Length: 239
Image (cartoon, rainbow, N blue to C red; front, top):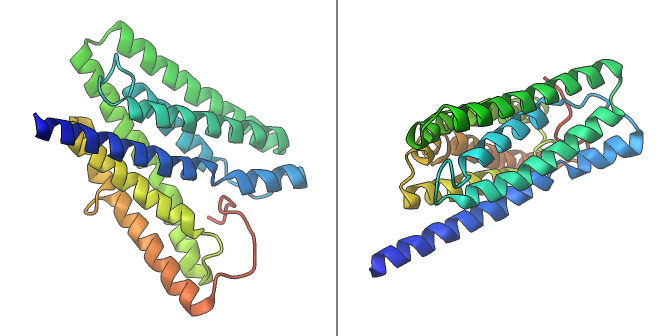
């Protein structure tokens, strides 16, 4: 009995920690949005990180709903907040983008919500509870994979420029801590699809390995060359 209570308390603590660290991730593009509004232009910013993040938040939000996966409500709460933030960023991008980017971003945004709506409809209409959890669980894993391009581009940029100005320390740290927290949450909740996601997030998985690499690069280049004086935003597209 005591072990069950302790396990439940630890899993809730891990989930709450994941929510807190994820919130730091969600607010990290605010300086970029402030610059876009100030300059009345999206300049060379890429809309793809925002689109990937929105899709991931929506799918993971649906996975965490009680009628899809009971008992992991903290997954739903954090991703509902994340989806709201990403939608605001997308709207700001559309308002200040040039015509071609505006059309592309609008089309991508419509595609994301159409796909999410189809997932909701199919999972409720045609899938039994267990199959619903399995299908949405796999989709949540695939949506996580789609977010791996951004860290790879940033790592490449840091090595190329020998500067960490495009890779803020707290963003890298919160990425690592968020992955680790929700991996622990998945382990303690004995959730099979959080186990699958864990492959992408725990210390021997892709997500946390990328987080460790970013932190190591930050330490190396900041100690060798300093942090730099430029304030260029992280989401500027250099790829």
